[in-house]
Image (cartoon, rainbow, N blue to C red; front, top):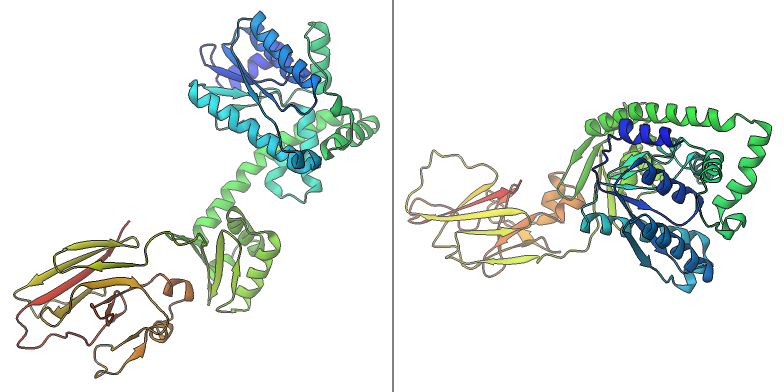
Length: 447
């Protein structure tokens, strides 16, 4: 077993004896065996131990064993004492999730502070098997079939191909001292039920099950690489990145082998559950333009053949900014605004949609750059002074509701809209033959 772990560390992970390792050690058989083997091989490592103070004197004795091993072998040990809330102690699921979060945050803090190269945990083959059954019961998806990853960032798990039976045998033959967590024998947690009842029943009927499972996990991992590549290719084909979210081309989405599932995979990282993804898909297929779906972090809008998903974070920036006559540029909502007052203007120059030209002497400063408000109106150029509601104008231009809420308008000091950049120039301050000073405005989106 020692040779197997040394081969895995050096050949699979290319870990050198000079690398600085941090080993997560609870004092249980798995982590104590890993520490013992690493010490015998000659690796440079320190130990991280967390005392959750959940088991009274047993927790203290776990800590003392780890510290005793470290002192005996001249190793540094970093200990984190945690006192969990009583309400968490009553909830097995919350407790386990919180303990895991605390554990990995502690490992990362030590790793960063001490410039650790790799963090090692003692997860083994039986942990893999428990995880697979656990995930199947939670209705997980294909990417969970590969189980616990061998490597994630700088976290290494060199014992994933080694069974609990092998670990126990090594501990017995090499007199590795460890402490048994009595709670492991209780079936309070789902994982314990799987470990103590489900797996023994299967292996009793199928003695070679663990070996077959080990090969299956390797096959799942290999196949998953192709699966992930295909998914990313489809995502890049159907998704258009936006500053605050994404647009999904529904026509392109329908060309995928399973469009509804692909939509879920796109939305899931933002927090959308499968049931909402199904509703979004159904609405998009019916072309239910205007339909919206919202969770705490994001919101979705169906807009013809597009599914628009943007962040739902509360607005933190100001929604209006003043632009004085003496400020050549300002920045507002990821756009840069530039202003020039010119003595002449070449009439042959064509303005693009991000530029506007006014009679400078008719424009009343300071200008205001702000977002659209309810009831806003504009007198569009060429409509002989007739007013039009801004929201109606944008609807006629097929601008969706999410985009409308982000479109800026520029007003004079009396809050009269003179320009909607990219969409509509007002009749206000229009250029005439006798115009002597020209106000040139330009907007540019930051990249």
